[in-house]
Length: 223
Image (cartoon, rainbow, N blue to C red):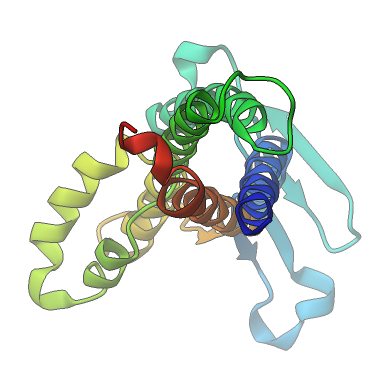
């Protein structure tokens, strides 16, 4: 009974994580900035400029939004292309992870013997963990990036790591532009879409760990 509860909990947590990740693909406000509002007139003059993975948008003080969709693939910013590709890969891996975990759960009547189901479940846990890590930056690296003593070294390391981590790659790009005094174009803040993606990726890793440590551990050892 305890094993079934753990398996179902891991399945629900990881599935919710993938739902969050999937929603961010179509979500607005990946990055956002406020335009105007100087001189105390925030009601009349303030406007918002924001972007997602597919378009740049402008919302004026009357709440009228105009969007410009990104052109053909080769004209889109390289980091947007990278984030799109990583999320697509992560979602593909997540599909197979959900299937493996569903088949490998003790409460389902497919998948063969208990030993085989444990191995399938552990394989699904690994896929959840890999898919989640494609989209989540290590909290430690994010913390170290705030420490000026090692900022330059960590910035170099984060660029290498972010090639494999979608949300953190996008967030790190915004952070780097915002903190760069020589960057003369419009600066943005991280939007809600990235934060929801981080939350979903955390759920994926938690679900994968639940599977691998508790429910899938019997599949790691031969009987």
